[in-house]
Length: 259
Image (tube, rainbow, N blue to C red; front, side, top):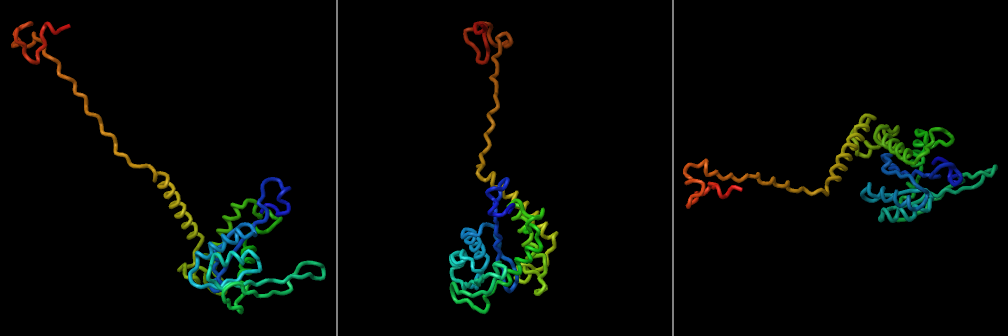
């Protein structure tokens, strides 16, 4: 990614180095149910197998290449599974180059049918991905420089492979063969799905932002201020009895009370 692993330390800028794409394929429907990008180590193998196990039910037979990380990851993720590896044997040709001179089938777990142990389907799908995606071609301007962009284009690639592209031998898309789609999708269908998903994601984030805000009863308005009625001066009340009567009338203000 960006540059080779051996050149990462001396390259200008930050480069992730070698980035591997892990894929799985169903031998019957040709569906690619899971994929992951990461390192070649056991951490990525475990994450990849754990995600793959959640997408299947029932008893499975799995074949992988001879990569040692699969021995732990497949058994831990799937539990009860028939698991075998097709280990390739390499040698040297006349020019000293590494070449595959043979292979052997190794039973790792359960009771796999050794006649069906093969990696041909996944190797052919890997070729399809590389031939239809220029981001895997080094020394070109189409080669991926950023891992985020690489992951996004792979998502588009596998979505198109599963739902939009008819398989030549099946005469249907892998999604149709697997029974998870009732038609061949178009690019417009994919765009509509993405737009709906984005709208739902925005709405969910908006609701989550206000989920912790508790509803409070609005404050009651204060009572209106009612001024006291002023007292009537004695000279405006003819029945007051004068400015200083002996018996004063309620509600009347007399002369002695004026300041």
